[in-house]
Image (tube, rainbow, N blue to C red; front, side, top):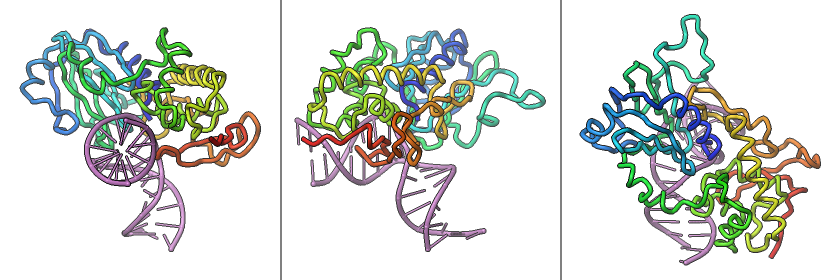
Length: 291
DNA sequence: CACTTGACCTGTCCGC
DNA sequence: TGCGGACAGGTCAAGT
């Protein structure tokens, strides 16, 4: 679901759609997901203009002219869908896979001065958004704890190795999923990158050779970049800022492909549970390594 | 302290 | 057809 490539795809869409828009109204009744007091929303959100949309790990940062930011986490089923003035329908079939909005999953509606709207939908209510003074965003505990961005220029193979080796005894998949080690990797791209590097997900990090770590570094960056270029992965809920599906899963090698054959060697792909998650491997390419 | 499990939610799918 | 239960997975809290 929304991992780094999906959140980045949403960011790119919102960045082309939102800057310059002025917020005139916000509808929400979701204390758990959006706990800011109505008075703060009134003072720092209503009337503000969106200046920029950024991303850190799986978190979206919508910058506002009031020097506040909307900090948004989509978790598993969150969507941020923009709708222009003209609602689709009436002879104008939309490319959007999302129906008329708001719908039953809409938690927050942000209306702009040109009558366009941004909807925060979240079927399972795991997601959240917060209105935070921009200078304080980087001091939020979970933001401070995040590991480096795997696609940044200064994310070198050596840094990758150093970060992973903070958990030498843990299985590599659990470490890839740990946001404090490396930011932005979730279940899909952990499985895909481990397949690419031919590493079993339970292999203790300390047992991986430098060559294997190098291969994993390359495989991880490759799958993240490929997925961004395909608009992310749509399993069930994920859509971009205009409600469209991502197509990465058509290119996936193992994720959600149990029972099908490995594109490299033809062995039947298996599904197992690792670190509490559904995990997909080629049992031939990704051998278990014993201590 | 390291690591695993459960909770948070709701919709979907499967077996009986 | 209806129903109970497993499952989906990001992250934090609680437990081992």
